[in-house]
Amino acid sequence: LRPIYKQIAENQNAEIFSANTLLVILGTSLLTARAGLSMALGAFLAGLLLAETEFSLQVESDIAPYRGLLLGLFFMTVGMSIDPKLLVSNFPVIVGTLALLLGGKTILVAVVGKLFGISIISAIRVGLLLAPGGEFAFVAFGEAVNQGIMSSQLSSLLFLVVGISMALTPWLAAGGQLIASRF
Image 1 (cartoon, rainbow, N blue to C red):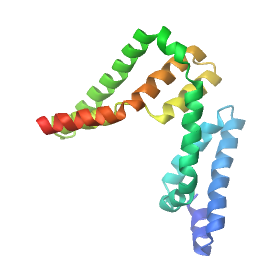
Image 2: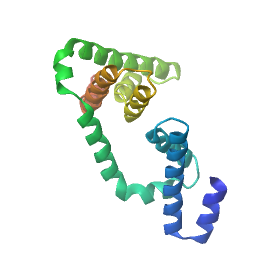
Image 3: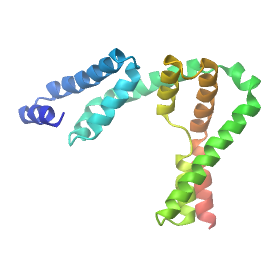
Image 4: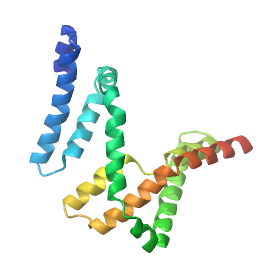
């Protein structure tokens, strides 16, 4: 990608730069679809490839106007795939899985942070910030269902857990701040 983007950057044509970025994303998405994987995974991989180039800031600037709209569509799609009845019928399982996710990731990140010489308070704070599930989980679970690796019911349950964990992020951040201020 670097030689192509260097050539485009030398021409100083913003429209061609944007069109090439779109072509890379669509092309990677189509390649993953042809390989039997989801287009969302292809778009994710394209983002990883583009982020590794020295033109990543320009790419980010070009897609900024669409970012909010696409994030809104993404989370609306995720929200529409969540079944509220599943939350009620599996509440103890969801709470337990949520506790396992948040607690496990907090402890893991805190231990790794401590191993790298970060103070225990800072390590716990970072652990709390990184504890929630991420957007990639939605892509991974969707792909697992498409490939027959995971049932749609388990995927829906995990969607709920990840969605709730993401919604808890402000409170986890506040908890980390509280811990840092007390110690």
